[in-house]
Image (cartoon, rainbow, N blue to C red; front, top):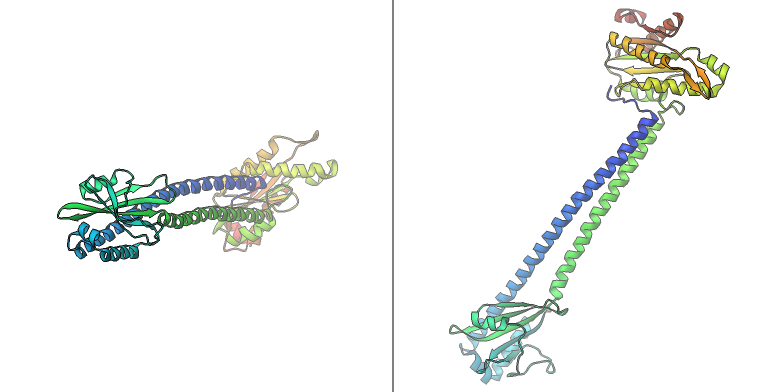
Length: 400
């Protein structure tokens, strides 16, 4: 009877504890997976940032390559001479440079080397006269990227690691007749990099809060479900004996009866005398102890119900008549074996059991219960402290 496990109050409490432990394990698993996902995300973020940076640099390389070609074409491939002797061409080139300056390019200029191998400004896109470098003004290169670019005729990048304003400086060669004649220099600010990282950081925060809120929501729903599941079962628990009550049987078990099942009606012998002789506190303790002893023998597929004052009902679905008899005898012997002692008062308790091992779903349940109750009556009539079985399936059918 796997659909109706026997859940005493202690078992429900145990299940709640197990549920809390399961919740803890699940949360740890979620945190573990979240940690792995977050680390993977961070790695992906770094890879994405690196890829975007490479694309930004590649974009600038393409821009400066086109600019270099324009310089050479419009100067009739005599770049240095044309710039030094044609003020109109200088103004045109510098205006062109100013147009391609985006917000992240702080400085865009062209430098060349004189005969003494010293750098000097040739063109500067800065439109503010106070900040603009004049032609032939000395240029002090930072790092060796300028010399490397001159020699290799390949673009170079200088990273301003400790500069809060500048991110990188790009140096691009202007090559005329297979000889480097000048260098385009561009100081790129952190702004583009900062904007990109800020957007990615915003997504990182979103990712973090998504995981956090998912964990909070899952925990709330899990506890909410566990709480109401416990409250749901509490309504079906007898507060004294902490086993199922009759409401549980009629609300749950009776609606899902197995095709064939077995019923055990159990009555505590001379229980009224216990109450009369020793009081209701002793009687209550006897009820709880009898329920505990019976419960210690039943399985998860059985349901133990307090059916009346001192009457208990066991519902199961897996026993044949012989096993029903053996099971009932074990219960009877378990209850009888040791006296029940409460505050020095010793009670030798026995029980009578009536069993209907032939109950079927197609017959009215009340009539199947009457058969078990009739067997219990026979046990009482036979002197109590015994087990009586309904005779057989045919007699059961005849009785109905």
